[in-house]
Length: 381
Image: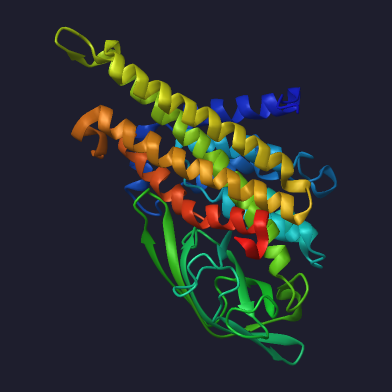
């Protein structure tokens, strides 16, 4: 299997890496997060206009670069290395995925707004009682003439503080955990009846608790088939998992590189601690975990175009490996740095926090291990 990048993909990686090195250093990021609005609209504008990366996975007919999941992987990996908080995942990967894979009448217009940096999306799917079950929904969308009335509550909507639009999952029929009766809607965050409570997360991102009270939606707010949207949701979430795994690869590589550099500088008994064999073994183990994570992420990304079962198996397997790597590499990095590894002044603590959050994003390691087992063995699992 060919894991080599094309010349265009290599140029994309170099362009993103170069821009972030110049404009998104650790100190620049800390200063940006310390003040309102806790992200950089100027950076987002540059992503759209200067780099054009918001169009990376979209076809040239839509104004994009003609890429796909591999381009998302490349961008997300570099964003992981810089701990970028701007909402590429929610806007380009998730919202873009829903629009590309559905026959939404305004898909072309909305994708154009995404590419231009004008429309920013957040994925409002999680509910307090739902854990990692995408079908466990209390939020409802009742038919009202040609449109719908939306009611419910969504928890920990990552990027909700920055968003202009929300992608919302809701029940239009069936019971609370039924696979049927699930629909997806595009909701303007400023619509009457939408209220949010924004807060910072431990890794520097922003999230929101979102409440919908009798929010009136037009017919064209519906994305995909009414009541039969779960397969579409699962497909887009698998794409989001692959992109998050790519981000994790960037985070893990920086944790390993930073730890390696620190152990070469830190001296004990008159020599660098990197000379101690037991620490060399630990850093080799960290390196192996990073390389395994990269390989599994590449595999999951390639299999996003396969049938539903193969795609989901690959995504679950990659998330399991990423979860294990995030825990081992993150904790090893902090241990080898000592207590200073969790201080706000050192970059390693910030990468550790992000790796810890990624471990549970879209499902924990245990959840995806059980998911892989079920997909492989069915009810026998």
